Length: 351
Image 1 (cartoon, rainbow, N blue to C red):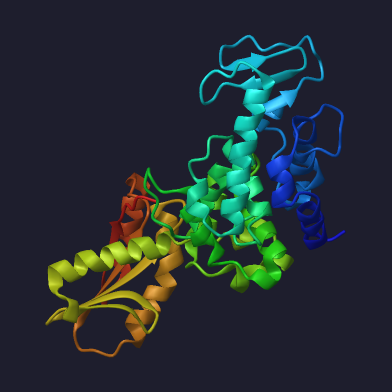
Image 2 (image 1 turned 60 degrees about the horizontal axis):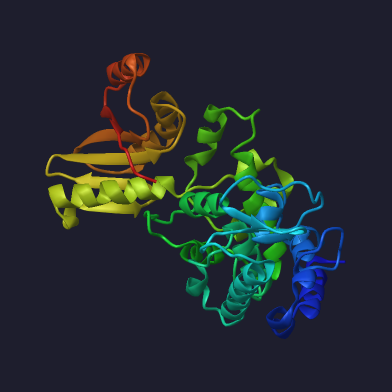
């Protein structure tokens, strides 16, 4: 069964009308493979994995497999068979707990079907469950990734400015701009693989940082590369662009917009003075030395090809400050350049 067939099977089994009227036993019953919760976690796992986090308590109310396993916390209520969370005030019975849960799930389904995703952000259930449900009913207008940390990481990686109050629905909308709906599941695989790769213990920080040196492109652009390469080879970021834009704004404020150009003949930034041209090349790498190594060939070529009688200054802009060994390296480069001035500049950007 394909992912699209699996998704349609779930929607056929659990239409909005049935969700509105479902019973507690249809929602969650130990040992049953026909419940809403089982389908959400296991029956549609290939559409988005939510297993392994908070176990059954993430569903708000659940039947205990071991009836003697009673939670020792005031945050939970229980009876002879079921345990529930007292998230929105104490609930004295399983019926109260279930009606609360079912009501929120119905609101999530309804909002998702109508594309009103901002209404889902503050729903009082476990976010992993909230966004898995929202995705299933969204007509693939949301990511199939329910993990908030993953969505935030990916949105940041692809260049979204994220504040403390940025909503998850906004991050979904931002990332969906990079998704080719005709290759939706391939794109989801790429995104999820990128997220998983960042936490692999056998990948060094230096390796990961070196992969973040290219300018951001869409998933459509990197799909073929992903098919042929290890995931490490296709991690794409917008960090370069953020530093470039930040620096452009600073240079314009200092020297005026007429004297500063960005991306002219592939040159990241150029500042035109009466007696000198400054060429800037921005690089993202694991150290200042690696930034210089990545930039040097390009920036020398730019200066060589640019015809002018003015002096030329080459400035490499990186995401790391110079350490002692890097300072010696920069001093050496300055000593061997006869025609060019050379400088390294550290730029910090909040990502």
